[in-house]
Image 1 (cartoon, rainbow, N blue to C red):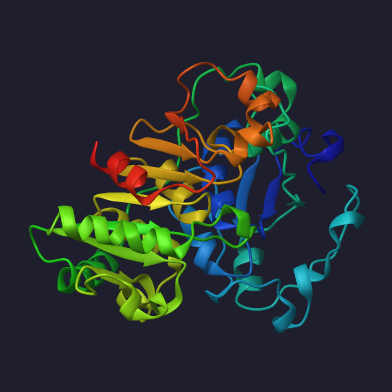
Image 2 (image 1 turned 30 degrees about the vertical axis):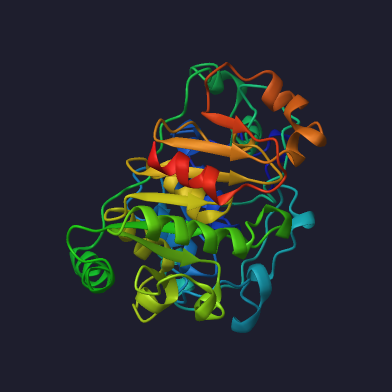
Length: 357
């Protein structure tokens, strides 16, 4: 079934397999709404691509079923896309799953009696508080109204993200990081692009200028850049001793991206990121300084608040009147620390000052 028409919210005492072929940020947001789901059901979740699904390993509300491959996909390469299902055909009736190994073994052990596959509708700020985020709006459909009434949704929803990282993976990340960022230095993650929309990305020239500011003002700082394959032309970046690509440092590790990234967050001093997976994971995890770079959307449309985060919003957002949409207008004051800028582009100097504060 899908999330609509109340069918899922009415389920009781079932084994529910949640098929979740969505982005890393959507996996991070799910950690806040899992406790709202009907507790009489048992839940397991998975997708083709363990790079993302590994984010929920260790979660006390849902088990994770590994697909056996890290790269993301829809199962086409294994014989049948989306287990042979069509999203629009799911209407509460019985269906047949065509499941390849090793997924099949894990799914059979769980013994699903129901399947949920939602297209995770994008609201873009059009739903009012307290269902103002993409995830909360989905919860409105997934959770029965009587159960929802038992939660205080006027307060931030706590994350259920498990921070625990395997010791061997932690050591591997620490070793690679130490070679680039020795004791006494401070490493920052700089994530400048996502996959869903180019308008969200931060331009490479500004990212390079930020690296120059870091090098000039803090000789102990290092920048780990995501979203810039091999950093492009290395000569365009300042002092390559203080800048490295994520793939250069960790690309050879045999582990899903989500687990490597969680291990990395234990050691970095901050995350500077556009609204994509690395930002949303850092927001959900907490415990690390976050500077969000918003060129098109607003943080209140997606994330629960994080006291260690500040969000810089380019003027395009106000020019389009996005700040007047219901999600923003109905939100209590102080929910997020947000600064609206007078320029469309987010200057590197402004980012650096936010990072220093």
